[in-house]
Image (cartoon, rainbow, N blue to C red; front, top):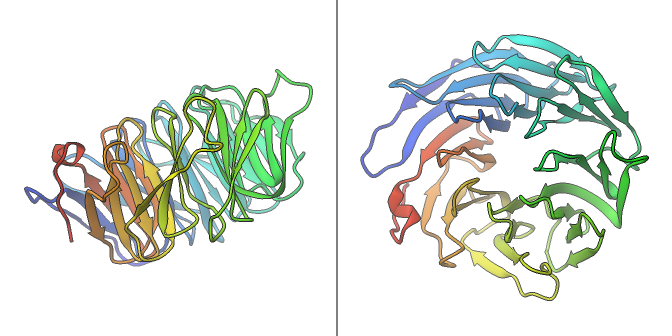
Amino acid sequence: MSNIDYSLLNKESLIELRQAALDDYIIDLDWSPDGTKLAVVTVEGAVFLFDNYGDTANCKLIGQHSGGGNSVSWRSDGVEFATAGHDGQAKVWDGFSGQEIVSLPAGDSWVAKVTYNPSSNCLATAAGKQLKLWNQEREAFYESSDHSSTIADIGWNPLGSGIAVAAYNGVTLHVPGKQKKPRKYICKGSSLVLAWSPDAKYIATGEQDSTVHFWHRASGEEARMCGFPTKVLELSWDSTGQWLATGGSSSVILWDCSGKGPADRKPREYVEHSNKLIQLAFQPNGKLLASAGNDAVLALWNPMTDDKVIERKSLSSPASCLRWNKKGELAIGQKDGKVIILGINEEVNGEGRFDIN
């Protein structure tokens, strides 16, 4: 790992706020709840803490997972964050000092995912077929290996009750203390990624067989969307829960999930990228959608009002992760190790259009 090169950019019309060069593929990043800090994990396992305030950029290396890193998640109060690594450990870090608090034995194999419950201090970890839930005292109070394959993704019910697991043969919903056994949403194939609608009405999954499944959480009713040229690894809901953006091609596909759901509705298609989409992210409290492709292009859309891109930015390499904070700033992690933070000019949320290159 070479020396960190970071800078603060101040240009009147340019909304690039900060940049850091970490010289290693950015595997994941996550904002603190107040948007003042950014935790970053690289493919080699390095963990960085990035300050997003003041007159100077500050990005410091705080620790390491041996063998590599996979995932990062902040606790809802911003006091701590957790990371997952190839060493079978989930490490918990102090959100202010960056000091390691504890290393949790999350599994015998590499830990694929960590995520905090949005309404409590409970931490979930996924390693191999094993799901573990940890309380604030760092005790594993729930464990399950009731999954037909290695876990591909996990996600908490956004209203706080239960956690969904994506694996081969569909989704398993765990609600500790409120069910005799986990609920199964079964489909033939391998679910690779999942995303809850904000109202917890739907669970969407991207599939190995180039389809998207929509599960009605309460009834278990399923809708299946086909026609994607490749497996679907990109899913993002808008803040209202009406729209789900999906990848699986070089176009952004937008599904209307209002009322009875997306079945029998023709989706909207948004074309800007010349290569496969690899990242999608709606603003958590806004209307903008960011997309990034293997063409090393970032595009911003307001799909509620227009099917044309409102902003386009060329990157030095393809984006490996995109995350918005609640202030409307977008963090971009790239395959070449760069981390870029963009602030969105108010003009973009209206009818203005401008390019940054």
